[in-house]
Image (cartoon, rainbow, N blue to C red; front, side, top):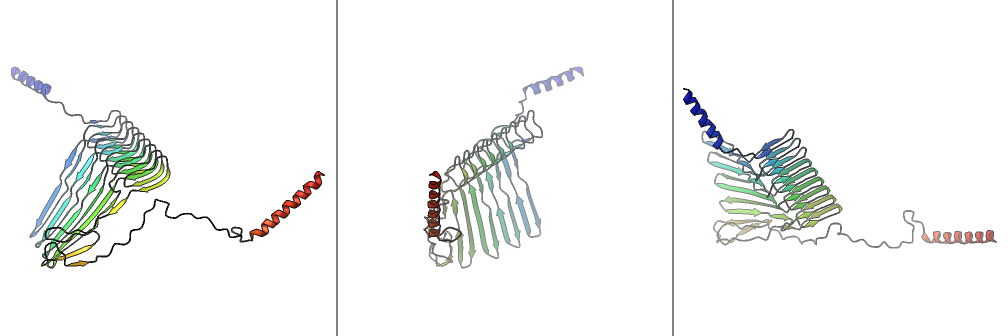
Length: 368
């Protein structure tokens, strides 16, 4: 019996020595009230069937980052994913890249509806908020060291869509929205909000920055007479670029390619562009248009619309001016009157000359 016990203990000891060590991804040395979670994924689903009716929903979500979470000597820090650093900070919330794709569908008596809303907040690199107070960072590539009250989010994309098939008619609609860019920097700043990426506001106060914004919506309907389609794409910021508001106070920048270093009270918006002109696909199907609505009868030739509804000529494009330069100041015309009173100017000129001459005569008399 004793021999068997010794053999079991030796086996357990050997297994403990040869087993690989667990990865220590989270570090919160000397901290108070810290919550740290490594890379996380979940896929909650639910479905039900009642007679001929069915319904289902799911929401797969993941939080993934590269690297370890560190919050040494900090108070009230929350970190999820990986690659987050908040040493010597207070009240910091850091989340790595987030991806979610909620979806729902239902079928009742042969009629079907569905909806999806895939959304992602990304960014390359980790988040850093050391020596900071009250910082929120989502995505990756965000830096807010030595700052107070900073909110940073990496490039964001969302594409919600809905569709339905009812009584032989099919309709669908989709919306695509995104804020482009990569990497935000708000070190040594106070009260900064940065969305997208490519934003820099070091040493600044009360700054709001956003990367290029793209929004596009489409709608399609299938009827016995044909298909109807519409789209309205829009963009603010053109090809993007970076925003810089270093050492500035009260700055708002939207789009990209904006610079307001060392400024006070500045508002800058990158170049915007609506969707392109209407286009006709080479194959059969509905005509797609920008800011217009087109309908194609089922008996028409391939790719040739038979009717166009709601099409309006594009309004004349107004010339763009720099902010604050829409009006040119002109010199005021001489009215011959004093301002506010409306009294004649010549009367006061004569009175002034009289007082001047009398004063000169009095001075000469006393000097003699």
